Amino acid sequence: MSAAAVGRAPGTTLIILAKAPVPGRVKTRLTPPYTPQEAARIAEASLADTLDAALATPVGRRVLVLDGEPGPWLPPGIEVLPQCAGGLDERIAAAFAACSGPALLIGMDTPQVSPALLAPALADPRPGEAWFGPAEDGGFWALGLTDPDPALLLGVPMSVAETGRVQRQRLSDAGLAVRELAWLRDVDTAGDARLVAELAPHGRFARALDVSHPGRPGRPAASRPAAIGASAARTTRPSPIPHAPNAQPMAVGPTPNAQPVAVGPTPNAQPVAVGPTPNAQPVAVEAAPNEEPLAPAPIAGHPAPGAVSAQGEPLTPGPRAW
Image (cartoon, rainbow, N blue to C red):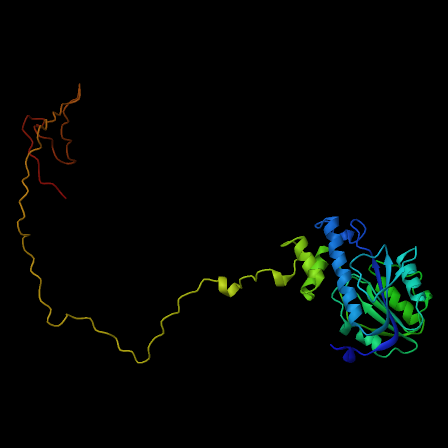
């Protein structure tokens, strides 16, 4: 979006509240999986992307309210003011107090910010109006005040789940018409970093994330190989053969002009003689010791062979009944 499309706010101050990217003092919730040095490099990249967006946004003044010392990451065209001591609510209130006229404050935790996202709060500042940029973690990523008043910030609990709700209620209770900017995700954890990098894959932040830990949580999706879809991985089944309409059954019969095949002896085949096995020894079968020959058992109703009657007459067996 061009500067003309965004709209000009020559009297508006754009405040960037930030912390110098020093290892161990910044983005500590990224450790682990990142080392303090890697977390500092990621924070520096996030701040650099934010400052680039600030430079591309047409405002009257750009002020970096910094906790720490500026480094080579600071581009020209940005004023630097030191942060005051105290809690986050006090530091934000002091940053607004340093401005005369309308001011819009953002942080360094939303490297996906752009002039287009800031445009609604800068297009036409009106008295009695406030702009509120809600963050997905319950806080806020942007706050715009036409008439900056530190009392609107002091005492608001910061960095907790209800920060955004309490701050917005404070604005409403002061009689301000609260306008809302787009919802954005702050970078607090490695999971946040990955999701934000996917939204802005070509910025310094996404590159720093990828260089710090390729393949670990936080790597932008654009630099990872695409997964094979379920349809490609699925085994293909053969298509069934459709039934042809009006198909006629096929009769199976003898093949026309088929010639019978004569089966005869194999030419030059030699007969195989079957004879006794050479050197085979006969096997003698002997009766077991003390084994008595078995006499045939008599059949019921018939005399045994050699049986005689009581008068001494031989008994003749009769016919068997089967």
